Image 1 (cartoon, rainbow, N blue to C red):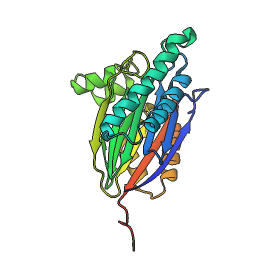
Image 2 (image 1 turned 45 degrees about the vertical axis):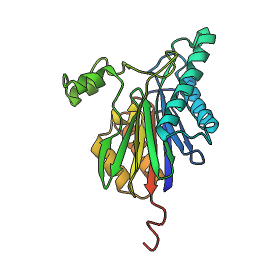
Image 3 (image 1 turned 60 degrees about the horizontal axis):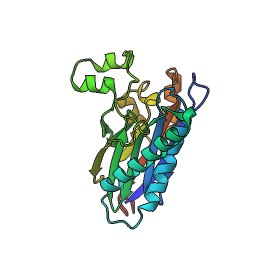
Length: 248
């Protein structure tokens, strides 16, 4: 399996600081997006520690006979500890935290893990479907069908998370393992994009071009044109079977 990747991040139109972080590490098969907890103290540091902790953890697991899902659980736990321990030993960082969505790829398979409300989607043959469920108060209300998707966008507690990285010594993450098809694209975003751009618009932007950098930059521009009320980060990973396009 050959993976093409690209990412873009932008401060948006209303924030002064970009507190998002992403990492694309093809040599390790690791791709992630981390998003601060909506203005909580030291959010920029929390997302940075999450990204760095995840990369260090996957390096330490090289050669271990674990499934991708098992490795991702270890990676998320390590990233959580990085943040929690920093907050515990530095009072000025108390309460900091971040969301995380991460993909790990190896031997023709991929696994997705997430904590919080940053999301992963699968775009396959122009259609889009979510691979994650938001760990948020509004996400829970949506799953119980107590509010509509339209109401969720304006809900006063839409930024309240039910899970986040770094706020407790241990964290539970959701993990999905799958075998991608040729041409599949996994898209990872923070809510600065999804609050302003619809799923169908995201699918069209990604499936209408072979150039992932163009797709990433186009989505960032799209979100900013809609108001850019938050930081915007997009990471795309396109999966191609080795040799599938030879002679095309």
